[in-house]
Image (cartoon, rainbow, N blue to C red; front, side, top):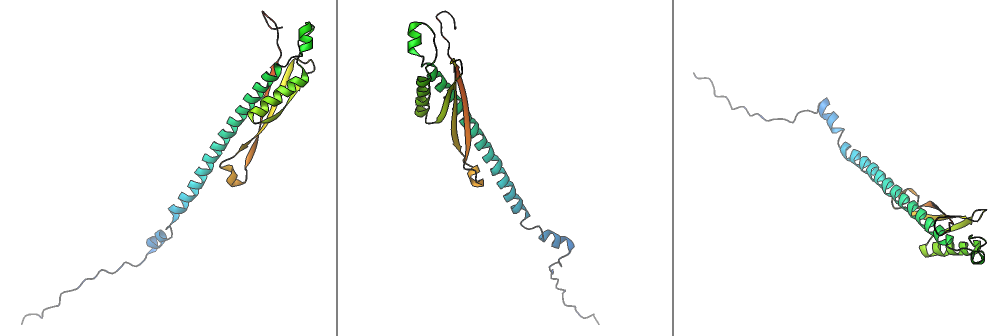
Length: 161
């Protein structure tokens, strides 16, 4: 007699049991997102420092330029009484102060002008503020900027005296 027919075997693939490798991999889910967030914040911080740092440098250069121009404008304010008589050519301190302050006001800055003891060198100091763009997030809303300029009063027809 022939052997009884066997029912075909049904094979069903069962889900593999979570082993040590699979459970270890599941523990890393979202790790890349956290890394990306941290790196993005760090890069934005570095870019912000670069932008605000270069902005402060530009503001300092502008303050230096304004101070030099104010000193040059103040150096034009000579004492007319001494110049007309030919006794001396020197800066009129009050007129020099006024000329420097007027130039600073037109430039939209504030500062001070001082005259040397021999009245031939005028020094202007400009104080300004650079409003930050990125550092404001960290609580630093502005940075102080200072510029310096000086002018020496020279006179003479053929050469400076």
